[in-house]
Image 1: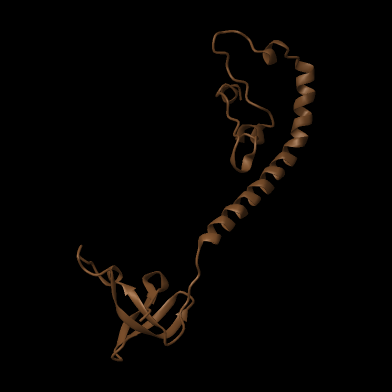
Image 2: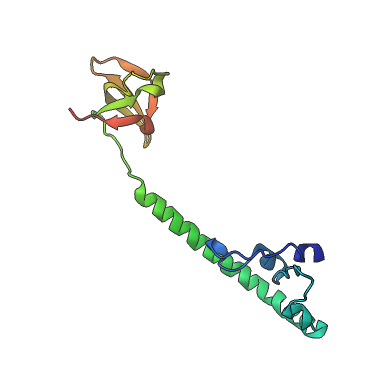
Length: 156
């Protein structure tokens, strides 16, 4: 463990850990950074093995609580991130009979000057919340289903 303890400062200040380093969550203690100029730090000068053993035993009892606290904070952080992301997502859906246009690149490669969207189609069947069967306006069915990411509502 001495090689791990000499790896330097590992404490994180942002994110779900909030001041707990992965090292302290694993081993129940903070990292002691090596001295840069050979001078001993206050912590190393005042080291007492008896009080250190007692402190380590007490810290081992508290490590599980720290891990649980970090897990709760990580879950809250994840929920906040999901809420922020989902606030920007605009849900959309189509009904049978709606007119839609589809991305031209979804049906094959397009050139630089080609139109980005293809002519209007009619929604014939809803396969699920994100997949639709289309039909040309002349009544000819399109052979496969189309994902909603490739469709846009057509306003005439």
